[in-house]
Length: 411
Image (cartoon, rainbow, N blue to C red; front, side):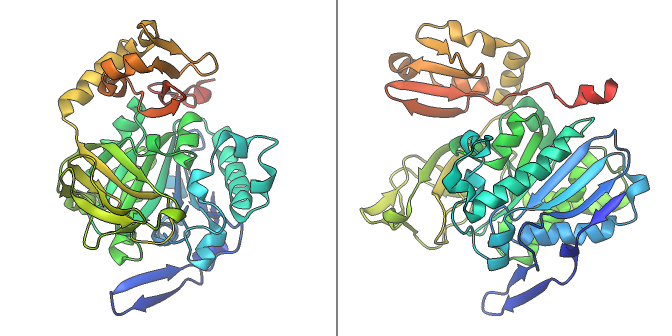
């Protein structure tokens, strides 16, 4: 069975000849999130792909619209279910990142609770969050096998495409099936992302930064990723026409396979933050190098590494990130430790206790935090860290290695 929305027709676009950028502006009605749905075997895996969670990133929506046309009539060949979804429909219609609040920082427990935040729910993004969460929850509830979620994004700076992955064993396994660079730890630096919410609901998740906003190459990168994901999930059988899609992705992986985030430069509108011109994703930088300015003067790199997602747009809460390569050796050590459930023993260390309200969260005494390297927590999946008074709070994702969906189809 296929469901195809009217969003698939009537796209309009304009070309800025100065920079050769294709600005895709799909005709999207507010609240019309479902681009298309395709069901082959309802007991097979489910793939959800979301584009345009930020309204100035329309490349993902266009890619999903293009793919919908190509999938139409293929239902009998599908070994599972596929859903293509548009994110912030109201912001997409205006071509802006968001209208009232960043939708990809709004998936918080408070906003998603039955009571919710009344002030937020009355905003544009409040309506979007309600509509999207209800649609996605209806898909999760009916899943009888593994659920995979792709979140398609783009960046204001140029550079190679890359995947962002929450650090669970299931996410890692899925991400490493793609011939693309993978970055661990971005989501753990942010609050209220959609993928964090869905990861904690049990889905395997992967974010993808497909390229620069409005570039036609970004649309092609998104299409290649989704085609490859359909094969990697087992929903579409491997076939010769999928090889060009894998090859397309492989050509973008020029710098290595696995990276991790070391630093996030958070900003607000009051900072008057401006990146220095000329920086692209994965550019090497050195500690002390001036890379931006704000109202206080030059902004310098706190450590050497690779620059990621430098902000060249007015709206945004992340000025830039700094990352570094991760050796495969450490990933293998991490996998061994987690299979041995060493993460269950960390709370017995002096100065470390488990949060009584969240089994996946540890509260660490500051003296211990200075002695015990954070890399130890990273190896065990505790990448999300926050300070609460004089205590360091570290958390890991739920459903690290076991899916809550797979057993449903066995009943």
